Image (cartoon, rainbow, N blue to C red):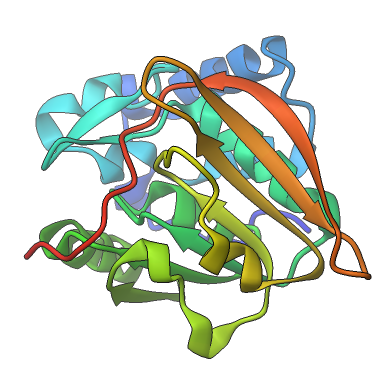
Length: 225
């Protein structure tokens, strides 16, 4: 599995959005412990500067989260890479993302050749993300809905990735996880979130790993235009 995104020249970037700063980011991620070459290749390939406001494009390849409006952020590249590595543990084919946001995490998953389903509660963010997917030629199925519900019509999923934090795991999402699958989600209050990786074995038993402390925006219910 390698990154399958074929970029038009307009997406390659120049200067602070060009190849040199992307390569520097990849070295930073390696230094932080990201070692899956497939993930590094996808992070290098997907043009992160296309997923932030133009005023922030020069900061797109810093290893930091950035605001995207509506009180939301595009996740730190290290966190995106860490979550993607965890998802790839089970060699998934079909992945559900809860919290589309800018669309960047979904684009990284799609660039890896995965079948991606993504749910976003904020309509304005989802409309912008869809334009980005089309611009990059990525096939990502998206839905404007409450992420806590998941996407039961297309369950089960080989992997589920949640990009906002809840005080506890959402049972509806665990129910949509296929046997042998993994669910990666930040859990806990703002002052003490942990990134959890849950593996559901063939008998339906769930085993949990703690991937370390993180800081995510809260997972909220309801819809917003």
